[in-house]
Length: 432
Picture 1 (cartoon, rainbow, N blue to C red):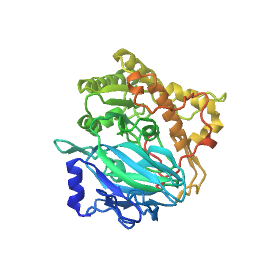
Picture 2 (cartoon, helix red, strand yellow):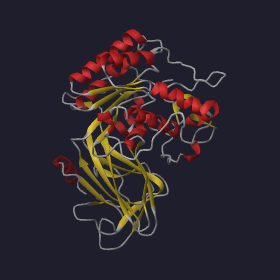
Picture 3 (cartoon, one colour):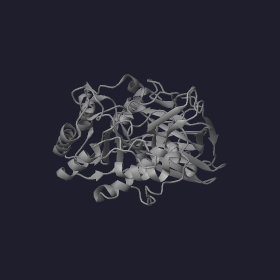
Picture 4 (spheres, one colour):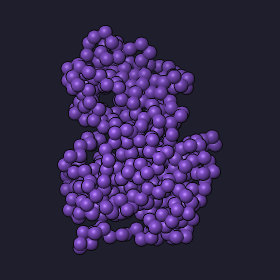
């Protein structure tokens, strides 16, 4: 497909359509070939060594006559300007059942366990926030850390990950969405879209709980960040450049702000004052701020009770929320209940504790009592959703039918089933 055809389609904003599998492409769709690998000339294609195979359903419907699938997670990217996009995904295989999980950018969970019976087809819509590091219109840039330069959530394209037992993908349609409410997340490693297994954070699980087309989760958190650093590196300024009146700003910082050094803030003075400053700036731009107290670290006393290592910072945030009339999601309190329900032994499964050689290149045991496994991150995301339910105007953006969750009765680890992504690493995220 010529470059100008793809870029012109994006510029004209009618949406991009891709058809996969053997057989002819549906009218108006770009036929993606099995060996189409993403490059700057093609501007779409499979990436990261995706080993895919094409199937043929047959019949008289070009959109459903073929599909792409793989035994491993596979990745498809499209060059796009930043913004929110509704992605319509068509799944189905006439010969086998389809079971698919969809992630975006850096392992951002968008939809889990999409099921289509043998011979049936299902359309799944997700809404994805795409960004780059340029602050428009003046062209300044976010001061990224060296490792972030390679992160998929800072580049100039959309990357979709398809996995699970049989992700038979027939077609993709990409439609710009300028009306969705965007929920911006500002935080640290406990919030960020962690790029590699086995680490995860609640912010990258959150999109799966929100109604597509109506809401987009825009995760601007980064490992090791503090309130001061986040603002100094122009991450907050980037959010202002992307936001519109009626959007939300979730703020969760503490783990790194409490540490000595140039980014340190005292809880009831400079920390609280900075929170109030951000609240005022958000409101001045028509955004709705929400404060999220930070979850505890995994630290138990001899009786199995959580030890507070966050000092007075959660109380300072609670105080700021009350004084400013801002909604508060008390993740700190909920995490205490959650961790104590697990206890010292079962809680290990919620954090990055893995024997040596669990992941490729991992020669040493991983023991991290701050950062979460995908299971732990998912349970914390459920806590955040529980807090959102208490904010009526925000709760309407949640998907219907989400089961009630009680942190005192966490889901069993043995019942948790989220397919791993292809990316894994051994370097612990910044922050502790």
